[in-house]
Image (tube, rainbow, N blue to C red):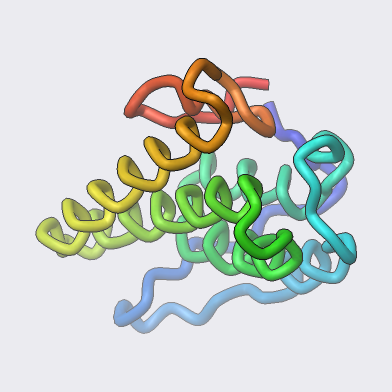
Length: 145
């Protein structure tokens, strides 16, 4: 089920180096909706954040990275939101590297995602399962809300 059905998915998946050209229209529309500050308490209203999940779940890894980067830029410096967005961006990047058959790079990125997840959970007090709708309580972070 899509979280942001009002913004269409790109016409095709972009994989760098494959000769594909990204469909930037939907991404630019989503990035234009990034709030001035990304706050955890408002994640359910953060359309670009949610759209990034739609993209990831549909296999648009490069696109998810692009949209989440715009959301990340609006996170408070040193905030928990920033750690989560870093982990999500790196997770999308790891998946993209797997599609590109760059498994060593994917493995390194998955390790970074796990380190970020552990740091985030520690910052949040150590006993948390979900944060901003994402299951951060296990190594297999995924969107659950």
